[in-house]
Image 1 (cartoon, rainbow, N blue to C red):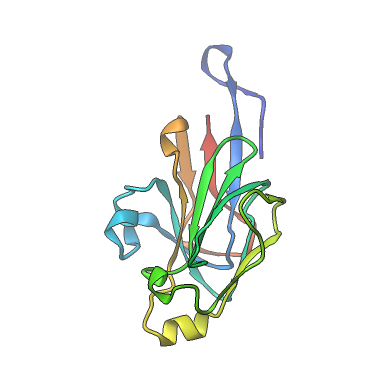
Image 2 (cartoon, rainbow, N blue to C red; image 1 turned 90 degrees about the vertical axis):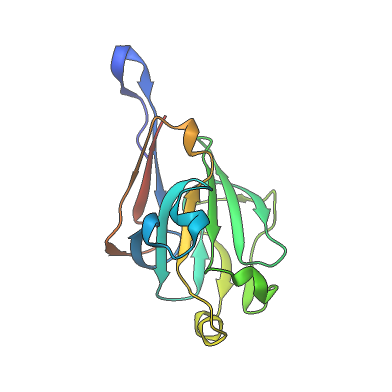
Length: 164
């Protein structure tokens, strides 16, 4: 995370880097086979094709919501980004099966803390696509959002750069 860089007209340019919450291959959001995500209806971001079944906090912040079905979680970063991590597509239909949450709404988290574990193989065997969107829901609050895709990433490797 970079902060305090001088922007145009002497305004402070605040930067924040969102790390990968899941180890895997990062793809552009436009390639996610779900219209709501691909068309950025929920916000800008990327998709991750998971290599394993662990989701960690992509940055420091607070858990704002853990979905009852355990397939998604949202966080508020210290710099005000609303980050949604959605594990797989249409996995809400599993009603929490194959997911284990490690945090609750209101919990303060630091980058790398385990948030959710999931059984990728069982979810795939049940017929679900595992591409997992990572979205900044309040994208409009940022003057620029840069995403980094087309590569394999380790957890916490930078995937979304926000500039306010």
